[in-house]
Image 1 (cartoon, rainbow, N blue to C red):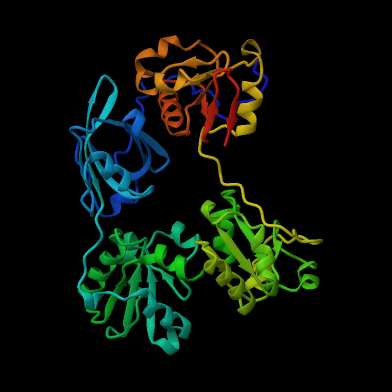
Image 2 (image 1 turned 30 degrees about the horizontal axis):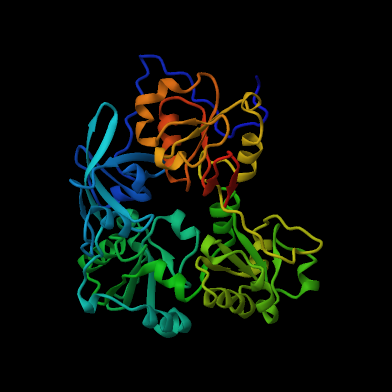
Length: 456
């Protein structure tokens, strides 16, 4: 039977001819290769989801996900702050933190034997600058504050938002762009990058000192700390490249007077009267979602900065002011709309690859099993499934899935779920790797003995 609902993930392409050997998979994220090499049987990437019940975790290597099993009794976990045991150590690693994983592979299963969380960089006190001191300088501006601020991150990260007055001098391209540095080698030169564990700004510092700069410093806490205390900035070209062209969801707030904004605004803009921010914030997307926000006024001036700072004070990170404001947007000949701006800000995060929305899942699951056109695969453990299973669902605990792939009906899409979405995503990646057409439910689901369910 033809599926009643289209699935977002198409089946994998047919296997290539023997003459076309697949390219080897990268063992390190591109960002990691800037400063590190990776030994055999090691991965470098960013810690993603931890699934303690499945004794597994996910490691993101750029757009690829590696699934690694572990034995808590033998796994070695090294973190900046020592943990009581291996699982406590894994739980202490923040999502997105850079890690190195040593592993062994047997029968297609990779098992981590050691996980090393990247420690914070160490610099002398006279080589660093604190966020409060940097804020004071930025408020004065480079001319009055007599400083030069450089963002050592790669340009795609810079385009997502940067500290005001910063110039992008990516560490990987430092040697090709030394002309951006000031002629005066005694000037205050400040570098920053992605936070306490990022080596790009310390690397820039070392190169600058080697060139003879005597007053170079690093803002070690970097962009993550800045966004908690102040807004960033981005240009119209950066906003277009980083968000609009990539269809990355964001919130655009227009702080201009309503009559002025109605004559022309950026598509999707929401009216944001600086004097009525309390009302706007009452219905604003949750700060937990970390919505990227760009605030626009006429010239990137005080109105936009006031709105941006209200959001920062309310706990939002990733808030940026559009440099040059709407005038700069128009000058760049970028698209403009007319009419009435939205009154309420909405934000729907970009779905994780392979995920199915709760509404789609519900539509499929509420059909009779024979009408679904897909297999619902419950990857929870037996102690969980004994309390209830969706009618007609196939139950295979995620740790057993690789050994039991033959139990899956051939030629049908598979929709995985667990109780929280973590093990379901592990199952999705395993099935995708084995050539199945699969999706997963990324949210919490509760199932009772009748087979009825509720999704958080």
